[in-house]
Length: 116
Image 1 (spheres, one colour):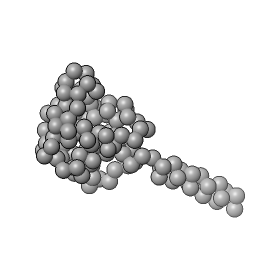
Image 2 (cartoon, rainbow, N blue to C red):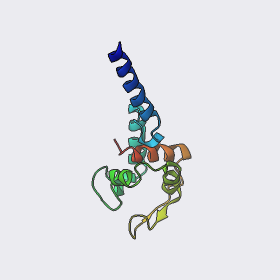
Image 3 (cartoon, helix red, strand yellow):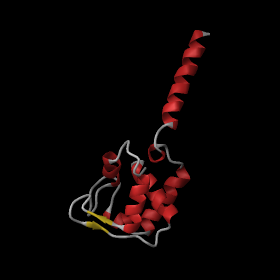
């Protein structure tokens, strides 16, 4: 009986910890990952960014490391759509105004999840 209680309490604690993660750092569904990859490829993101290595822009995994534990999904989505400069060196990130806000948010979540 005590083992069952301990296991249940441990499982509840682990589930609680997962549910408390910021949305971007939670596990992404496979269909969301595929959709984000398609949006990144079709909008030129992968011309300057790679998942693991720096090209012209920082690697997606490096962006995820920089912002780990921070609630920056909305800010990152805004930078993806409106552009930014001075965050990762001298190069300017171009605006992607053709992206729908939902697409930019999906990309931001995917990047912050480490671009799985």
